[in-house]
Amino acid sequence: MIRRFFQRETLAPQAGCNRTRMGPFCFTMEPTIPSSDTVPALTQVGMWESVHEAHEHALVLLAAGVECSVHGGPGGYGLFTTVDEAALATDELRLYALEKHDHLSGPAPGPADYPAGFHWLACWILILSTVFLKQMADPSMAGRFSNSTVGLLAQGEWWRPFTALFLHGDLPHLLGNILIGGLFCLMVAKSLGAWRAWVLILAGGTLGNLVNALFHHDQPFSSIGASTATFAALGLLVGLALSAAAVERRQRLKGLLVPFIAGLLLFGMFGVSGELTDVGGHVWGSLCGVFLGAAAGWWQRSTSAGTRTGSTLAYGGACARHHHLG
Figure 1 (tube, rainbow, N blue to C red):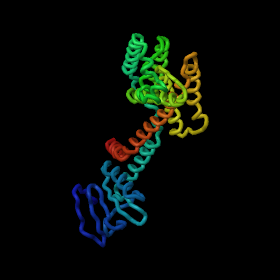
Figure 2 (figure 1 turned 120 degrees about the vertical axis):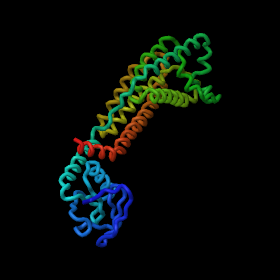
Figure 3 (figure 1 turned 90 degrees about the vertical axis):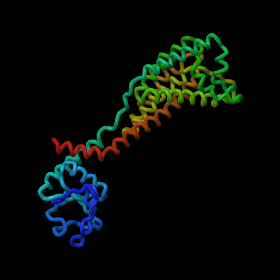
Figure 4 (figure 1 turned 60 degrees about the horizontal axis):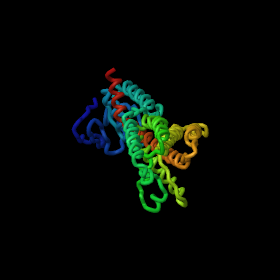
């Protein structure tokens, strides 16, 4: 009968076999296949190319209460158990293979559904409203903090692409960004989580303003408004959708064009209307948002996939113990 040792034990050589036990496994110091002269009444229930795979499946059997040992041989690493327990071991390994396959090849994680973070939106509205009231009392704020090519490029006032996001020309301008922009921002927050969403929204808006100012470097230019951040939020949603289409192996033209066309339709509805509309800011904000959204979606899914793969061993042991107890 095979015994499991939980202390390191070196067995005396028997018939030319030098074996060492460590933990619950039996290791061979030399590639040998157990025979009736070394370990009697054993039968092989599996063979794998790597010792890691053999030990993984040995863990499954041990968790189910089946005595086993791993031995190296010319064909790889074999898993052996007693003849009496061979049928039970084979069944446990079959069940583990099925559940491992279902666990790893199940549907890819869809877009995460985080809380919308209404309190973050409320803070955003409060900040925009407070700045607007200050701006009404001091109209010179628009000149000092707008996204100006003169201030940014000639005078080195690097903060302007960011501060311009908080300024508005009139009340309808402010309300439009609060209502339309708030909706897009909530949607991004539900996909990425509130704090990640707002960091990326402000980053996309700031980058959009910066690129817009650089695009107008050869002429006096000035712009204000949170709409660049609003369209960065729209771009984030498009980027997340594009990332999902690519990762989930829907690289066909239709799968990639649907979110892109949807973004263009929304942009056409809200991004080009109005005589004083800064179309360039909307375009660059959207494009920066698409880039950031695609990167965030790739990071989100790669992190989730790594977590799923890293839990395989623990999952297998738990599955085997569940079958044994059940």
